[in-house]
Amino acid sequence: MHWLRLLKCAALLAAVPLFWALPAQAGELFVLAPAAPQPTASALKPGLAVKYAYGSVEWLEAAEGWRGEARLGKPLEGFVYGDTDGVDYALTSGSNIEVIAFIEGYLHFSAGVHELEFQSNDGLRVTVAGTDIYTHDGKHACASLGAVQIKTPKTGWYAMRALYFQKKGTACLDLSIRKPGGEWDWTAPEMYGHIPQ
Image (cartoon, rainbow, N blue to C red):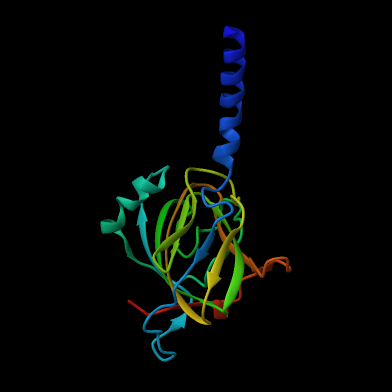
């Protein structure tokens, strides 16, 4: 009987990394509220606002501690930065090592259900309409934890904040979108907007 218990414990421990590999939000549908009031077209500029800090971190919690040190950077075009070769800068930061980015702005969605797939290198947390919809913590290659589903009741702008860090070498920050069962596509520049700070 004792050996059966040991086998069950070993099987449980062997399964733990599989659970770590799944997004915490797998299978959940996030119902989001549009920004109220909606930003005016005259107030919005293309892309996303970003502030940068520079320091050695390996987890999002540590990256958050650098918020007070962050300085305004060149706006991002959006989540449209493919995997770098280790020479190119991370995002618009001017550095390819130890970059921490505090990102803010708006995402434009049509009414309905959408699947989003973020890719990052390294850590990323995305909050839309006050709800954490995606977190991929720690150091890792350009990868995704899988798609998340959102429901946007109205066509319009949805407030977004993200925390990103890159430790050293290569970097990426991408977002693909599709209607459930449809074809994946990269996000278009028109989907991103920010109010200059």
